[in-house]
Image (cartoon, rainbow, N blue to C red; front, side):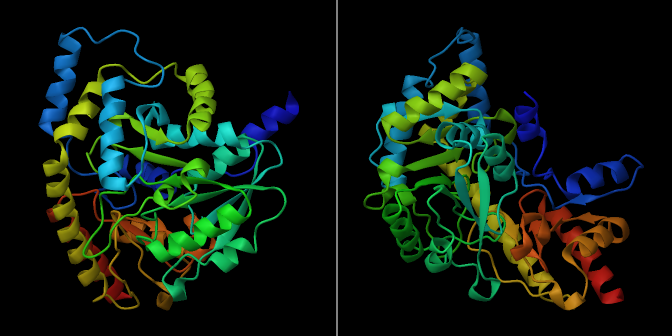
Length: 389
């Protein structure tokens, strides 16, 4: 019992980083501009809300299917075929309470005590806690900032041991904003196939790409469908972060293993919000395109303004809602710089070190979390602060 409790409470102390510090300052009445939290600034499309209300009025307020609503899984199978080039069937899909829940179920279903899981660094901190709760051990494979955080298959393969069970991939990547090329994904797939590893692929930003960047699901590559758990959500693209709904895609044996987890922690996802998700899949793409266009405009604004600030260099992210500027020329650690910007400029950004040592010297700035007017105000505050140093 004590050993189990230690596994749950020990290990990584990662949380929500600067968000928690900001709440304390905000409680004192300070006007903060939040660019640290990856939440959409848009509201959920009205047609999705209406479909959900209609489902409640039509009596869809009782128990539902454990795997998720069949019409929703059928619509998602068609979307996966058309957009992701993944030949999934409805039986290969499990509806979950957001991508966080999906990754929890994937890790609990595949990772045993003592197994090693490779995270690409900079990493998303929440994956660490889940791996540790399963009794697994996190192994970090650092990507090189000088190489634009490209996937380095040689460096990743060097981290593989006989105890390695899986690699966690985030594509498009949080926090770096990279959208990995087919060549990079093929190299990573080669590592997984050679060493018989699972890939747990977080693809929550699949629709949010810019310019010529195109999202590719690693499960669509030869030999990867049977060893990949692909995780998606309605959170970012459809501005449904508070709804807590997503889906996992994997081979039937892996879905069945994950179902054992989800049946025992949530039974099934809320019945009526699945009808809202169904409306989003069927008819929500125009709203997604409008929101992504807004994100693109704010990305361009943020990158342009950051590059005018002393000591800051920022390349344009290929996807996601994050810029990851290099602030190393300021001479401050990323944590000290984020703290100073919070306390003195009243702009909340995340320290790059929150995402591991490979993120040191950088800041993560979410340009999707506020209106254009607030983004402009935040850039003004930051510019004033950096120019006054």
